[in-house]
Image (tube, rainbow, N blue to C red; front, side, top):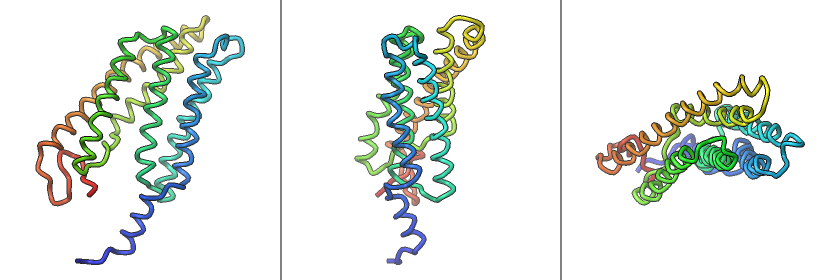
Length: 217
């Protein structure tokens, strides 16, 4: 059996690393989730601009989300933890925003239920994939686009709840981002689910790929 090359060994070390700059940014972004939720739900928050601070936290989360991916490519600091942590934090921000906006009646509860159900269904497939040697779903550009639309819709929906010309200006954009984000989020969920079904049915090729998913063993 051929000995692994130095490049492949270094690549394995990089994938197994935990203490990387991108992972640190993801952890910081994760710490912002409970703060974001608190700011949206704190009683009397409107008096001191809690919604504005919630939007600031969300914006900083979006910046660090872009930055950790950029730094991972620039520094070559890809890791298994980062591949799991980055989309997980996105899901948590979406969940926190959906719950808060649902409680504030800015988003219909059926939308909250549909988007949360999408993530729960996909989460339920991960142990099955893991038991068969597959890694998690790879984030697609469509999936990133859906997340982008929703994370922009949430602050606009907050702004649309206020009074005045800015609320009137934000309202159509808020609804547009929310509708397209919801449709695309559910559509990409269906694509991931189809990928799951194909992976269970399709034969594994020489590269260890079946149905678009790669085996990790």
